[in-house]
Length: 437
Image (cartoon, rainbow, N blue to C red; front, side, top):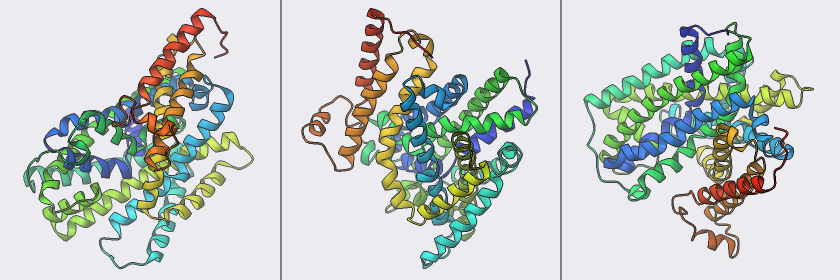
């Protein structure tokens, strides 16, 4: 069996980390820290489960299944096609890619040019996406560009901010506020959705496999093993960063009169620590993090669509997604976040269930009805919940859902999914169904 050199394995792991660590990964942990205060470590545990544990398990499940379409095929052919398409569109040009440009613009440009007009984000997004597309044209080279250069640079810059905060904290921990006054663990778990990393994990396997192959590994089992190891390496780095960023928020939030999001908290901190140069430092952090994530998303989405619609070349898809993302990014960060929340409330539970069942496939492979039944029930509850949050509650059904266990925690789909899976398993045992998967 072929094996990656330790240095190459570490670089591939850093590459995967840099693809995961984008805009949301920077702005959500500090806000969590500020709101959870003295309960920060319990909140971070919930956040780490959904924002680190599930993405790592997603990478493993997809690697062992031979790709997202193969994993989703266990539910059904039509589900596999549509679910894979929606996942790639949401994590790609629909939501996540435009967010990388709009977030980095608000953090790297707006603080220095507060009166800049709408032309500012147009010009910035154009340059940002052109750079990202040029790097994405060679997806097999991402380890040399992200793993060797951009990821280490990003870690050093974040380290400068964190060390400064530890040595000179603006304040100390305060009592939990807002949504963290109760159900801290569950709230941290649901807030982890906003990083979109569990969905991203279902996509990134394609690009990581290409980079492993570019390291001279051709054996399929070795590629899977290298991908799994890369997932664990990325997960460890993410846990460390989320912990320190959460701490930063916990000791900075109480010093502020008002904060709206993690970006405000980080902006206040760097000005407190380093004055005007601190804003430049933070701007560089956001640009590099968002660029890394954007490149990874361009590459994985374009690889998938090239395989789905080969009449358009891989680079052609990169350009198409660049143009679409450019158009959506002009809407601004607030609009993109508003759109993303209901979409994530539907796709995330489906992704979690699919990953969990994929990792325990040996249990369900002789009870194939479990897959479609569980996904159908999970999807139904998730859609109704998302409609409720969007103010579009369905008559009777929407109100009834509010009485479900774990509704306030945003996990009302969990118990129905478990019950549906058990019912499907029992039915399969009573009346065996042949499996093609």
